[in-house]
Length: 279
Image 1: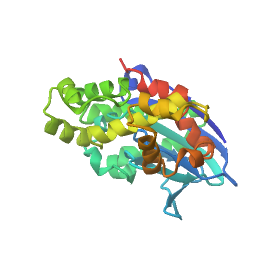
Image 2: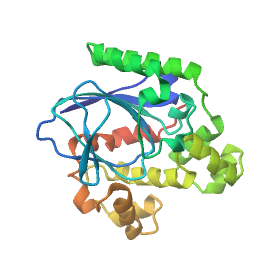
Image 3: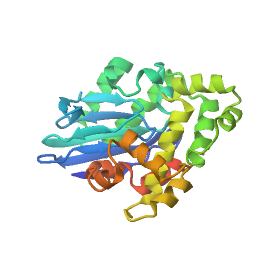
Image 4: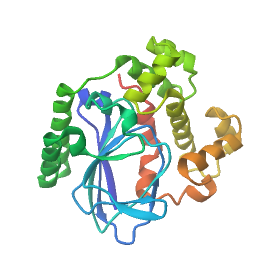
């Protein structure tokens, strides 16, 4: 299984972190445990769709769909022939393209035709027809520019609050986020759920959790107590509870066994881009 990423055109970097591609054979592939990271995704399977596990029961994914914000781990298994493109949005990016309040997409898989109708079906067909991943990325960029022109556009106040939350590793107090956005805490909560799909405290929790992965890297023998405190946890037990709640397993069982594709999503270099300001 081969995974790689393509950066979006500069104007799209405000909304899209990257286009990613995975290809190869999924025969005998392990289940991938994908932990929530605050980024919705648009997925197009040109090969065989993956299976998603609901409990222990596998369900075939649609061929083209959006995964909204996640509040717990997503477990998927590649199928026989892998040829998949993903668009990883920044936390506020998807809402700029679609009128649907993002909390309606949270923890859900939604076929893209349900969100954009004919243009979505055309996107899927053109991605299938494209001969190279560079062509697929170009098709996706064209689709995104068109959707931005037709969509509700960005919410600068929530973008600013999310940007601060990312730059501070999820350790920003709610009152400070509200001040950054120029909103009351109640207004901030409502706007966050519509634009991001989660409230500010819930997104901060995911960002703090991802910061653990960034600091941990490949060193499973790290000083967990120090990492927990540095990332804003009360203690190591607090961090372990987040692993159980958000990843579904303690780090001793999860780390190193989450699957090759899932590890790409928490690679420290990828997370460094996630936490970097978008300009």
